[in-house]
Amino acid sequence: MTDQTTLVLSADTAGLRNAAEILQRGGLVAFPTETVYGLGADARNDRAVAGIYAAKGRPSFNPLIVHVADLEAAQELVDFTPDALGLADAFWPGALTLVLPLKPGSGISQLVTAGLDTLAVRVPDHAVGQGLLHAFGGPVAAPSANPSGRISPTTAVHVLAGLSGRIDAVVDGGACGVGLESTIIGCAGEPALLRAGGIPTETIEACLGYPLAAAGVDITAPGQLASHYAPAGSVRMEATTANAGETLLGFGPIKGDLTLSATGDLTEAAAVLFDRLHQLDAMTATHIAVAPIPDHGLGRAINDRLRRAAAPR
Ligand code: TXA
Ligand code: MG
Image 1: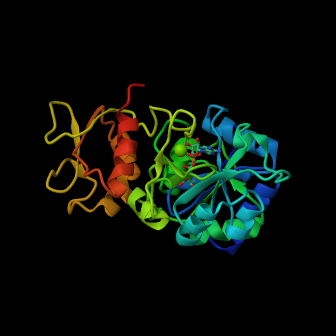
Image 2: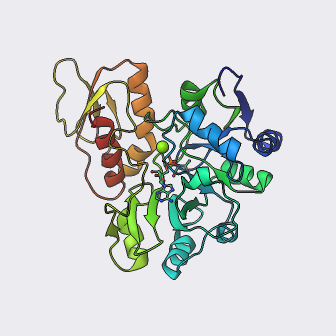
């Protein structure tokens, strides 16, 4: 998985057919979804899935999300509760991942679930991602296409910056619209929020008609390591001005050297968050200060990512 040439494929029929063939051969293909770029492999092929962990340098206890084209394909892999069906109806295709009991005989590699008896599944809402799933015709395991612990990619250029030479190909489908990973809801028991993400928690609770349980010690997303999404420089949150030597990432009235959204729009801030962190890396910013972000709607997921970026490493 090292020192190979990473192909950049166009997001047309020929590019998608090529990408699907690479997946069929057990290779690794990064592809766009509406949230972030995923690093895809055939979820039924142990060797291919092992390649994901190797390319990302990811701890092997961390399970992966499986991407499928539609609800019917998801129902072949996991058992849906009535609540989970309601959420899938409301939000798929879209930035929602459901963790559900794995069906016996699903054929999913044990490396995908890291030995758990549940599986995280998602139907992405992106023409190119959907095109690849249809061309491939099977379940695609895909974590975000970045080296473990680093910033998630929202463009093909970000993918290449982190993984060029370590993966077979990237399908270039432009910038991701949402810009934050999917919201993960544990639905094997009482519905619980495992990761804030592209669909606001409030929106999901409005659909369920009751509040989500908080992830506890026994209900958790194992990938939620404290330090994650980290740019090279240190990160300080809730900054209203920059201290000496700091580069300020602004929001709304706090202008900054760069801004997440000059108008204070949380949707825009989510869409550009990872790109701004990549830009700060490119500027070799060593001390990054970030303006306060309101902690509601998509702001909760943005603050979650920023807290992880600011965590001690
Ligand atoms: O938007 C997204 O979700 C992107 C795109 C590519 O779809 N994918 C993504 O995957 O963010 P990844 O692998 O970076 O994050 C997967 C998260 C991890 O925190 C992992 O621990 C959790 O999902 N997860 C996966 N399977 C799980 C399971 N069976 N139970 C609990 N958490 C699980
Ligand atoms: Mg990730």
